[in-house]
Image (tube, rainbow, N blue to C red; front, side):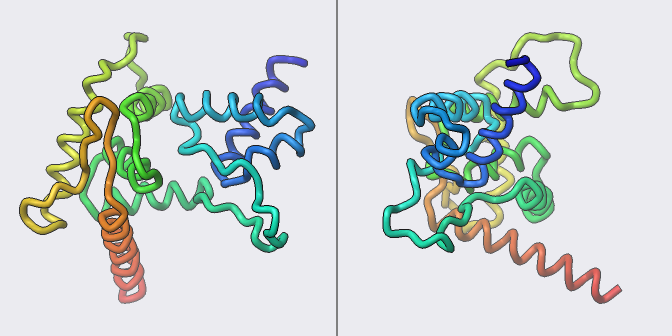
Length: 196
């Protein structure tokens, strides 16, 4: 198999995983072992390409209509990034961190570092220095993101919580509040467009 074909297959697996297609379903579709598909997806998660491991398989009692992806499409995720930037007045990198935090129950520091590296790799004006960014930058970005989010929550409430020695998380209620604020920002923008 050529390197290009192998890359296309790996990219397809990542896209399917991001769409919420279960591991066993991807494996059956590619006539591959579930374990090897799970390893490919885990590597993609570690690189920040896939946000979370999809479920193992469809539930045995599920109807075909229940086999719908639970993840956001790439276009929906792009819209969420843009809307997070506007709703909370954050930078592009902070918005990427926020989207990852909104989509997962908890996020380890390596995943967030991979977000930094992937954003750095797609910049038009890439730095001449190929060395990776210091992993401590994750903490700096989280600190700045917390400051930007504080005005939207009651005083003293920390929206992004620390999992000591592991990473960060947002409680479900805070994720729901953030998504409500994003939805309100979309409604407001839609209303402004309609009024003009």
